[in-house]
Amino acid sequence: MTSATPDNANPTIHSTGGASASRRTRLINLDLADADAWDRLEDELVYGSEWDSAGSESSADEEQIDSEEIFDLIRSISDPEHPLTLEQLAVVSSEQITVNHGKRPSVLVEFTPTIPHCSMATLIGLSLRVRLLRSLPERFKVDIKVKEGTHQSENAVNKQLNDKERVAAALENNHLLSVVQQCLSTADQRGRTA
Picture 1 (cartoon, rainbow, N blue to C red):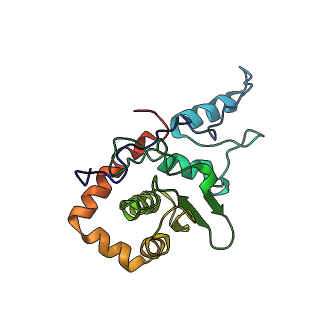
Picture 2 (picture 1 turned 135 degrees about the vertical axis):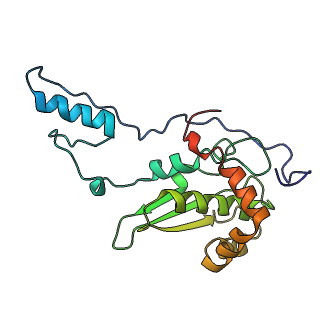
Picture 3 (picture 1 turned 120 degrees about the vertical axis):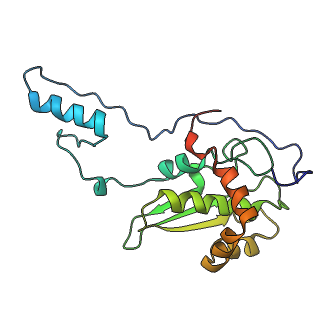
């Protein structure tokens, strides 16, 4: 997408997991005479409200965001050099995601560049950060890091990706922003294959 000669001209393509494993199926027994149960089912199907195991509605705040859900948000982001997703290139995986639900909720995403001298590592990290900042509730602190030992400039890349001022300056660059937007153009596929 950004350069004529890719850093990794022949990347390894990995099979994808398809739809997220965190998708839930629920069996609901409905009594034809129980009008309230039918109303709750209609609300869930129409409005997407959640039920707890007793059948009453749960608060959206009670549902915890997990690593599978984060992975589902980022798996379909396009690689800046290849017409493939970050999941297909094994740049991201649910195993590289940590979600902390403490006093200060946070998400840590580690990613693995396809080669140790990948010049697109900062752009990939920036795309991950933008996707998560746009998708997650504001209460979450987002940290993006190159997985330890996978890039020759990992400390410099990590410093850039987690410095608010540098990220803001990068996103003010129209060319860089358009490349990030191009990477994110496939992000809404969320686990569906192209």
